Image 1 (tube, rainbow, N blue to C red):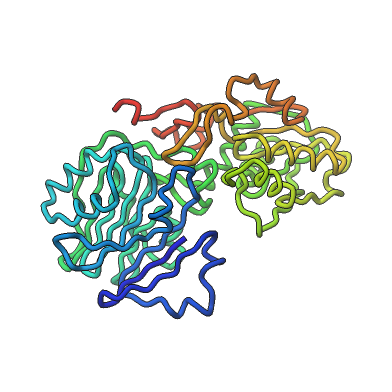
Image 2: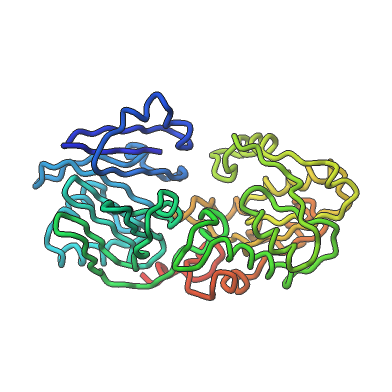
Length: 393
């Protein structure tokens, strides 16, 4: 993570690995001062250029002595450097900027800011989200709407695909590159986005509730309790409980000091992390037929261990319901989902997967069901082998 501020061309910043809370402390927050700034946090991708991380990154354009900060969420198909991006965006010829963005292929959002100008861009495919808000006289641009609301800002609008939003001494203005699609990544609804956010005006919380309801409709089961896998499976588990009438229990507690294990770099690290990540409340589980609702299965390590935990705690049966379709393709633009041969759903039947993870039954929401939960709009669905507008390039 990183946070960088500028005040009269003087830079102050805090950068480090891990969560914000691990890096920003009472003893260093007072070192931050500035009129403009950028905050940045992302999961590490295996192909990331470590020399550029963590962002924000400080840059001096050749034709402008003013310091610029840049942050990029996502990746490019076009072969281009960060230096080139900043140079192109510091061009005050808006037609040239439009042409540049129209031809910059990938899934990305970009913010470049100095003390006189901010430019924010959403990719012309609409895969990455970006929203703009205001608090008093200050503009806020963020990848999630909840960020704006959490600091008492007022949401102005979500940037449209290809939108180039500029704020300077003359006020605000939006320009538009060529729009190829409006397809936000559907996996944001499933896993990454905070439940208090909206994506293209669709509530993430409501979508996750509906995922659980549709899961029960598509894969009903007789059971005694419904349990959500902490944390991102819990809202869908509540929806499953409401639709089925099966009692919801928070019977697994997550260790809040352990992060998301599917992004750890090695299998051994992931397996060790899972062992200390989740802890059962045994008296809620013993002798029960349990429905465990999780957000997704990627490699299968986590769900297999959770089933073991439930059965070691005395569960009579464990029925797995997954609030996303089977992940069958690698993904490198929006998430770091591994090669096909590392995916448990690759070239395996549902029954084969069930046997590997040790479940009594297994059901995934259909892609059509997930689309329904997310408002029946167009989405980027590459890892589920669904719609991918970039394949048209």
